[in-house]
Image (cartoon, rainbow, N blue to C red; front, side):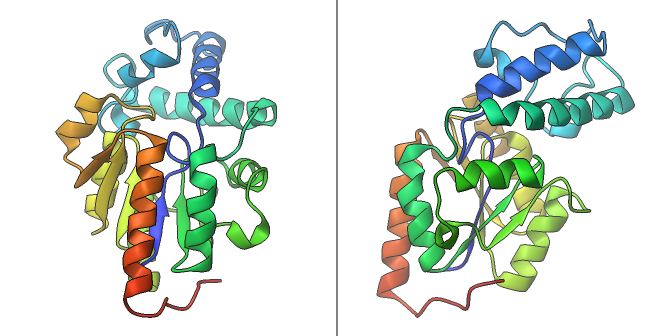
Length: 225
């Protein structure tokens, strides 16, 4: 089994409530009244459609949208300290098992320190991802995924938006999507993942199936440092 790669927000960590609150705060602070006023986290799929960098250009220009997402990332990083949970409980065990076997990586649009702090709430050091790439490292998500495929043999990226699916395909990885994150099921289906998992329990079972196949096959590859 090759190294698996996961998105963080919406896949390993449920940050939808925080993302919604910070979206509303950024919209108010920047006075971007052209952006939709979201009533709650359930409305997030309205703005998490297609390619994320272009998802707001239905209402504002591209440069304004980029500044908005930068501000949104700053606000969500600050608010992370108030999150009641880190890793979604059903996924703690599978991640620990992956870490001691083939290893896993996280590629995220959030800040490195924020993601690491949330991971360490529930995972001991030996269960942490071998590689964590965030918005603080240069390059886009496709570039980071392509590098993981080239250097470490990564084959699958698990994401929660149509944008994640497109980045995975652009990097030559197999896209797997979860339906409990930020995007609507319709947007995910339109992007065409190889597999669509409904719940965290489904993702946990999928990981265990992958691990079972790995243990029955060849020895684990060397872990990345």
